[in-house]
Length: 179
Image 1 (cartoon, one colour):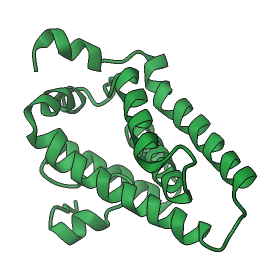
Image 2 (tube, helix red, strand yellow):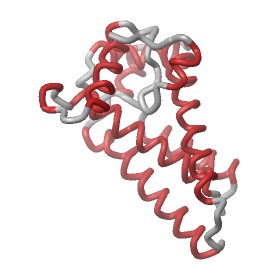
Image 3 (cartoon, one colour):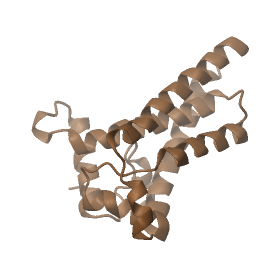
């Protein structure tokens, strides 16, 4: 990626917050529309779970193949690996465009699967940010300590531990690294 383009992937703190705030607003909007225009049904629980689970698979595939192998995104992602405390990511205009495209593909009326997908995305944003800011000595749960160690191992051994939200895909595809 040309250096003049890389600067757009170094985000200020407001741009870093954009994905989270926009995703939360979108999820609230979609759930409100579903409640108003559709009746609540038993399908919501498995549909939500399916959307969230599908997000985790997308997260794994995107991280493994696009961010580490595809030259355009690899250079942007290298910024994150070089300085994991710096906020690097997708410029808000790209995020906004991706949301619009997905809503057009899945229908503006939405579905609980789409809501699950976006909640999965929010889970990723939160957990990924926390793996870089949590102080290991202050972590109270074994789960949080494992999550931090897993992701820090990814930064040390970039061809491992692609999943942030869920380790299952690394286990299934043989890319998991334990300590």
